[in-house]
Image (tube, rainbow, N blue to C red; front, side, top):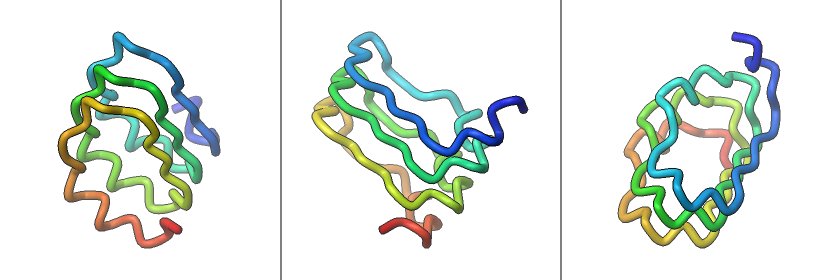
Length: 79
């Protein structure tokens, strides 16, 4: 897609956001993902595990997240 070259994505204070799209895994160039103050977000998509170049994942004040997807274990570049 047109966003495949996107390297950084920050989503902040999106209180109505309950989930992220499965297509997030198509952002193959993403190396930095930040989610903050998204209290209605309840889960992360399994497709997150497809972001093999992801180095920095920040989850800050996302109180609705009760568990992380197992696919995060595939992200060997995370620091």
